[in-house]
Length: 308
Image (cartoon, rainbow, N blue to C red; front, side, top):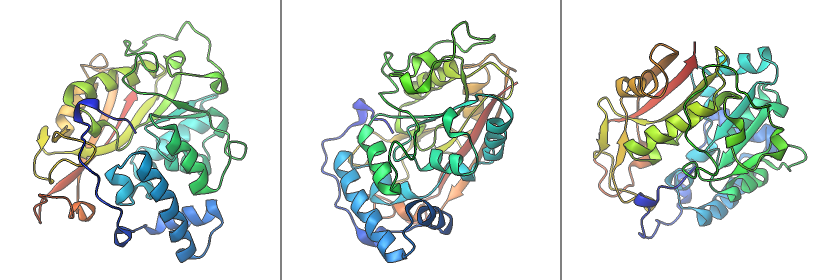
């Protein structure tokens, strides 16, 4: 996760509401397996306790509505491509940016991605620490390096043109990293879900360029994720009023504008394959937002960018 200073509001966050608790079957089984808590009610209490701590760190709607416990990465169409890359390419570094509690990178490791090639980053290190509490792990039992930092701080992640030839720098040891910049041209896969839509159109373009600069030029290297989208790019005015963490309406890309951004603006045209599909979602988790209009159509943009 990351904050957008221009959209940060002083509005008081809404109180937590236990009645919003919802966990799908896949996430429930995953949580049971990793935590060892088999009883659904005990697991719910455990999740509620961590949620309360996380909401103090930053009152994100995804935390209030429990969407933070449901898995995103494993549902992406390109997920198997990611797992295959981790198995077939030696030393294939995988970055989960905006990782929050680390649910998705844990799922990738559980499904076979080599843990020694994984790295995670988020603006708030407290969320990563709470991830250990949520999943009952420790830095020793789940030894993925975590690099705290603001994705818009050039000291942490500076936008540079993507590489079209092997980088001239050695692959750094992941455990020694203090920023993402030494990884330029070395990362095989990047996951970024529920992340881009936090920012303005200009910031999304800057973030795309920054992530592209990290990606290895080797064919098959990929960036994948999902976030809120629209049939036509523009501000989302139909989904309720801005929340306690944002003062301006959300900017959303369409599948067409998202493809144009990556293939031609970020990367040289024809050097990447961009898949982007729009899926309508019910938005039941948004119905308590002030100004939400019942029956409003909401969409999720699911995508991947693969180097050719």
